[in-house]
Length: 384
Length: 164
Image 1: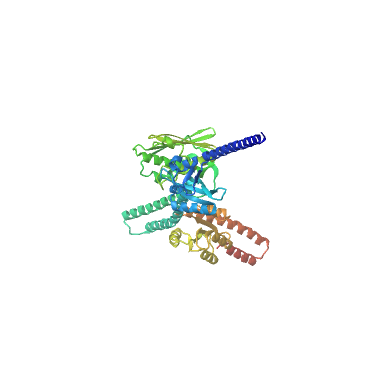
Image 2: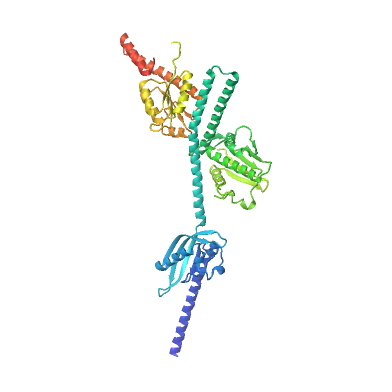
């Protein structure tokens, strides 16, 4: 009958609408799932009391806990300062949203995690708070970089101070030099000196003169290395540069009983490149070799520097018989700030910077290593 | 005149101890030395007498070596200046366009090297002096002055160029 069939039509219409709503809901849910699964950030939702009711895949990565482990626990318990996190949530309650630029959480394994937190309250149709949604960006790496930058800046400052000291020392050394020279003159003219006394005095004056020359060389080397100058493109002999670098590193090698062998190719090895930058690379590689050898502690301590020329390319290798580089670290050593040295002893900047320099000069740097036997770093450079 | 005139050296450095010994050594070796401990003092000395070579420290309080050297040369254009500098300052000095020095030497200087450079600077000065003097002498002759006028003019020139 009429009313029956219109009722049926109504029911069919409602059923169709329900189905389309269901589909839309499923799709929306699916979309949300995708976001939650994919986002690297930690995305969570808490009920009105701050207890976790949802926790994204990113959250599992950031804090190290699985959803099962955190379900039902107040989110503030994961913060290092729960009190202050509570205040943040209260602020969110007040304003509807809140931001916490550096919230510290504790990872399951104990490390501190720095997060950029953004909270937002979800309200129902009646305007009542239903839940709080939080998105947290993991900034731990960024924070580490900032700390390292501070450290590096301090090292740079020490370098500047060292230069200043070298400069200052030159003055009294100059006076000592002149005074001793004058002493030599006076002695030459002095009458009544016994031959032994005269000989002895002349020897002493000579010694003072030599030592002041030595001071001068030390300060000049340091000042030359520390000089902050613009890139210098020019022709120079790589063999000469390596020899100079070794001489600059004499204090590093002193008392280490390391045998340093130098195997240069025939004649001079002239390239058109940046001498100062290349010097930095050599200082780095040789210092690393020295440390590797010392770490091994063996009596047989050898470092070998080799050069060779092949058409338009120049090859320089620094080989040591030190501890070697373990397999798991091989990809890390060229990464900025990676270091195996204790805090304060190494910056972790050497190799990445070497790589950057060599590549900018149009060359390549590579290494081979065997744990317990040694490492060899090889640089290839174009002749011009 | 069978004895070579002694080279007149003007030393400028705020490090008094250094100049004390340097002066003594140079004097013993036959140079004529005046030690001054500031740019101002050096200019005062240049006002009073003629010098062949100046040895000027770059870093001094108040008037620095570059300015001292410039003003000395304004007063005595043929004066040859040797500038002493700590490492790294050479570039700054050259960059600022102050290339008027005869030579730049790194501190602490090697005494024997300094003496050699002083002698070289002196030779240069003598050469410049001779050619300048010859030029001006030519002009004087061409001006056609009488014998008395000539003598007077030559005497003046000698004073200007510090030739005794």
